[in-house]
Length: 236
Ligand SMILES: [Zn+2]
Image (cartoon, rainbow, N blue to C red):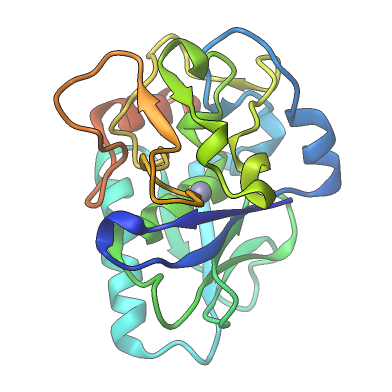
């Protein structure tokens, strides 16, 4: 399954592939359930020792490699995760590519020789998108798809472009958790209020209005994002 996100709040309507699930994950992850959760519970989907190896495709220029490294350094500074550029001897790693087919990542550690994280040349090379996709790669799903999201947001299905309704499916509570840290309107993993809109009207509304229709972050992880990641990887 591929998810698409519209960056309507940036003034650009940009559809991009965002999260790719293996067929096995797709089967395991989806069904309705009433709890709040958004990181994978399966220990096998965590990167061993919290060390995430990555390699750049040869097509990626140096300035973008630098942007990538400084962006993920933000995750490294606030958690115990470590991102290491892998040499030839590293077998399991994230392969960073820049093909023109969207911004997307596989979910969690797949123990594969080069699980793809793609950032197309135009539209994906922003710090918050790099962090968002890397959080998928370490095992974090979208906030607005958590099992109990209906307590916090209202999904306005009538405004959603029909072929993207699946991007609002909920995960099963048995496969994701948030360690009781709670729902977060300002998670970097939250879609924004008009993403996937077919008519410009909102697709997500806050159940607890806080003076802004906006969701998510166009900068960095939220405090709750950091707490969840630290719990997930048992950071001291
Ligand atoms: Zn995503």
